[in-house]
Amino acid sequence: METETSQPALTPVEIELIQEYDSRAFGFLKFTSPEEEGKRSLIVKAIEYYESQIKEQAKQDKTKPEGTLNITKVDPTVYSTLGHLQLLMEDFPKALSSYQKYFNLQQDYWKNAPFLYGLGIVYFHFNAFQWAIKAFQQVLYTDPGFSRANEIHIRLGLMFKVNSDYETSVKHFRLAQNDSSPSTLSKHESSPVTRHQDA
View 1 (cartoon, one colour):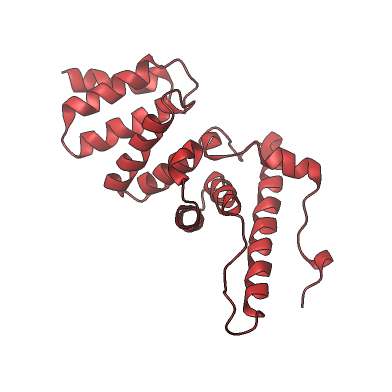
View 2: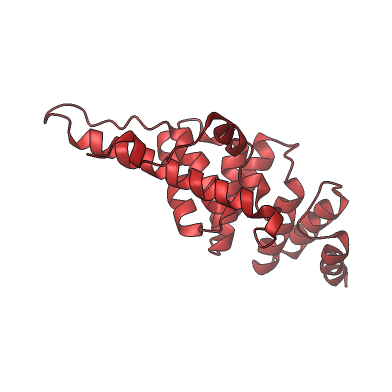
């Protein structure tokens, strides 16, 4: 049996720092620069920490006497947080797995806009456009002032374009272009897309 000292541990300060990271940081954190190495190391450490917590809980569940309910006591938000961190590291398969576990355990998952956004990003990555569109639209419905609405509109515009729904595509590209929030695409990069659609 593993002792607590052999498991990765996070200090209270590190836990507080990790809580600042969720799916909304996707595309904005670039781990290629030396300045970002500290953040990257912290995220990797946090992923190991949360994964070890889940494994430890699974071990405890296996040692329960037969006939007792085998209900996992892992807080669903652990899966959501883990999914966000895996997304930031661009580990899309693991992020999808964590998000799906959160989805299955959290009854009111639809109230968690960063979760829905992260799930939408993962679906978008895997070209599961039907599911990505649903997740992104749910974010906009749940939180109309979502801080990454422009990122959602860019991706919705691309997906509707692929689906040959050009009118809806242009609508979303325009909404993204009119949004002054920070974006992973500059206004210059997204403007040719709408000019192409207008032609």
